[in-house]
Image (cartoon, rainbow, N blue to C red; front, side, top):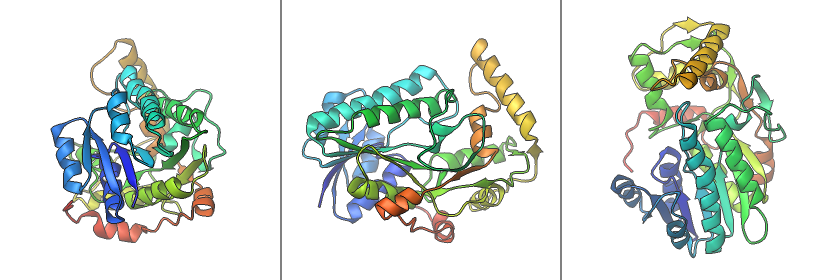
Length: 326
């Protein structure tokens, strides 16, 4: 049995990781910012540690005696104040690293994203050798890339760090991406970019957890590992099936890729210059991640970590609509 600390334990990936850790007999402590989050992690069988990513002392105290930290907490989204993304994703990661080092933790596993590589071109069969773009998209991609840099810088000595990057996380108990997609369809805002027939990699949340656990035990210090469900699939077919599992049909409305990108460019300029409230109708991040090919090669994780991506697409879809019981 190991003692571990999790940030973001009440979130989508966090809840599933805490369940996996508890099932194998680990003692889990989870950082919580609210009574609701505390109730969630308690219900999962973990011990809540009150605080947030600004509270280095609270995190360090909670991490004492822990062998590993899983840092999952992040600010997600396609738009919002740049300072808020930086504070959570960059400063928050630095604070968690400082707390882990001060508490004598041996290994720090950081959850990242393929979005750190997004530039002006499709991501086709990319692996960990792909360099960061010279001009990354702002907000989420840029701050997650900066967070990765902080994680790599701190690897060495008594604290070993490992980074895990999934692509398009999905599965049962999703309170992140899937509800937003369902709302977009129901409100009439959803359209396919191009015809949606491009290829995409995906990562079921159970496979994300498998990758995180494998990185914690077998990952090489300072290294990064992509994890996916295996062979890429057609984006339109996958997303249609995902939405139909929730009782909604995405329909056939489309917008040409060039027009979507032009609208995104113009909208971001307008929303930044004025500035305007809310989110632009379309953003470059959405066009790049969902309107063109994003395929990932995860052979390093399979080779070095023994990662298998054990949850198949069919298994994931079979359980997708089953109500979660905690």
